[in-house]
Length: 411
Image (cartoon, rainbow, N blue to C red):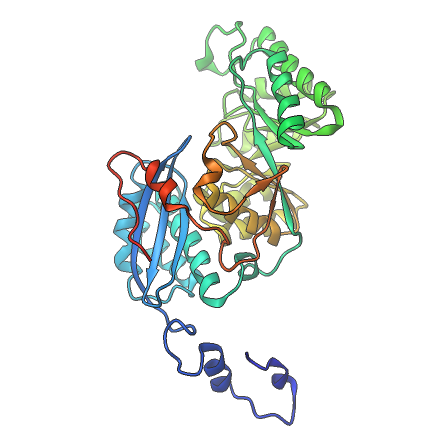
């Protein structure tokens, strides 16, 4: 073990070369320290409630890291394109490799979209790998932690999405039986009053129906749970403002994505028109895009999707900007346990973390994808093991591979 106290002893001669030698091990061999090279990058797509793209990075030290990219057509192919930019590189240089990939893939559109998503999966795998090499949990690579547990909100569904009482019944069940104290329901559901959904206009009957859902759910759970409601970018600015105003008397945790994501001026207008908290962010990429939402005060709660937005450090950067404006972060998440735990590490490492989404409570084998318990009583206890701190169950991965996909090579 390195005697770091000698660094502060004026009578001790402790050179950086000595420090490096002790940190790398007596022999300086790879695997005992930081002289490591990437040898391969592989992907495997799992057929979950979304097609999760798992990423594995191999090294000459016999250590591998696992990450995950948000689902999207062409992501595995893009990761394959990036392999030449990674082979032979040191996986501990996470920031440099991230910027290297952004630059090298600029012709593929690395400002936003699936290219950023593909890079996100690599970046998460690098954090897992670096943590294993340095024997540190991933949150420590992000600056340490503010909390030991991260709150999880459960994205809920019913067979009768349009029935307010069915939604209330499911909310009560998820709180009482599954132990969550944070929920989300969809509001962009049929009401029976629609005439023309293409024009994004909400008729009075549609607004009344959505208010009925909110009223039924929030009054059923009362103080036992916070409840958010998702609109999936469906409504016009005027309709969104009318809906948000009608929801002001209720305990709405947030109203998510009420208008399309492209026009930030309209988004700011909607947000500033109501006391109903507005959440936006999953359809924006990198800190450069989400920064505008935050600085223009167009959002009350920001919701980046970690394996889509740019990865763990990019999400940390977004949280840092948000914190300057006293805006909390509620990470959107439809991922497998891999990216979900990655989000928990970031949620532990930033002061303004509100919650991480869980979108797979109806998928019976989600938790079987890794060997460890992930969500317990509506929270994630942040792992202390090196890297992400979870281990893929390769039998479960193989059982649920997308047709035509192959399992990773063994480590």
